[in-house]
Length: 565
RNA sequence: UGGGGGAUGGUCUAAUGGUAAGACAGCGGACUCUGACUCCGCUUAUCGAGGUUCGAGCCCUCGUCCCCCAGCCA
Image (cartoon, chains in turn yellow, orange):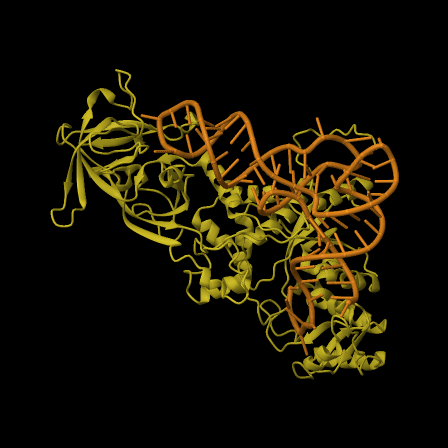
């Protein structure tokens, strides 16, 4: 009752699930907590799963417990072992491990079968011969009760024999199911004698041809949790209605432990779509280049885009856990990524849209080495040298023939600083006589300003980045932008979400110029290209000696605002 | 006009009967060898109506709005 708690003011308040866990630990209800992450191996993981992974593994870790990795593989018609591997890799990439605790619901098929027999013996399950169509019509509606199946009162012996027959492959697919015998009048449709076993004459990726009957999710999940001694079974909101069934199975079968199912709101992000079905459509319709397209918010896409795993974890911690349906703004994710990369990314110079600058008064054939910091706020990250010469590339947009007032970059007779280099002043412009396009600009440099400061104390407003022409490493850079133009591409059900795709979500630049230190970049290495953004060497297409960079995220840009006004 | 959930700034999250706080976004400013980073300031919120209470975002009553559920998917 009193307020003299010992929590430090800095401690982040616990979300409602961690609160429950803390209470259960304090009350002695549990001494060790065990959670689980239960993906179905029928697709790739996405950022929404990351929220669940961080919750389940995170809560376990924080409380010195365990989080089991469990594949919910009860529907062999949709599942493949290739997905199992990609899911494992993704979870590990996110920074979590399960140790010995790798499980499959299919590990429990024998036990699940035995439990089903028990249910039949208890008079709590029966074999039903109704067709799928008939079962649906018997189920009733939201406002009307269901009708009991004519097979509901079969004898135990008959049920046992029939169920065994199902197991032995004596009946055709769809001809019979095993149903829990609960209550056809329940206002909760999930309790109206739900199907718990169906016949599926399909080989399973792990059990092969051993089974031709497979248990349904509701029946399997609660029992798998109980078998593994899960204490807190965390799932998304749409399973709230299933909790009574979860509890019914465990109560009826008198399992030694009864995990508590707790539901939380799934993640929604603006400017993207999250459902497996829609992600699949984008892949199959070639709207993107695959599951790992860097524009996709699949874990593999995120990884390839260059989002650090630590940024994803931070993001998941930031957004919190609640029961309210919510839409997180994409900028929150981008901010987490920027924040992480700002801290860790070495700075380098790269020119994306090169414009040649000739420094007229710099001796031809001369080179020199200039020293640059790898991170302005972190001297411990060291320095590197960058070559300078008479011809350099600058960013095309850093020169304007007729610059507006607040444009601090190059223009005719304007002086700017070359980052870590010299002050240069533009003296003339070479144009294509026919098109009028600017081909190169001529500048003079002030030899006194080597390193970037003037002995006479004069200041320049702008500092621009550059790359020495003879030393430049040319490469491809891919600029990624949001995949959708609207916050919720799904909002209007009468319009296909793909109508909202951003036609400019990918821009490929083939003639970018990198400072030479970048030549040997390893796939996955990331940098801040100063004034341009954060970039990561592509995991698939980049190799040392022939780098290919993906733009992970832009830098915040207050110039665009000034430009507009 | 069945059942299950949920409503706090533009968006998330906190406040557990006692000063409505933080993050993102936005706006303004400072600083700057990255128009980055950092720093400072500002705008904006308890769904509504009653009630209990010295005191209500929190408790009670009645409303309103939103989401989920009729797979032999998970």
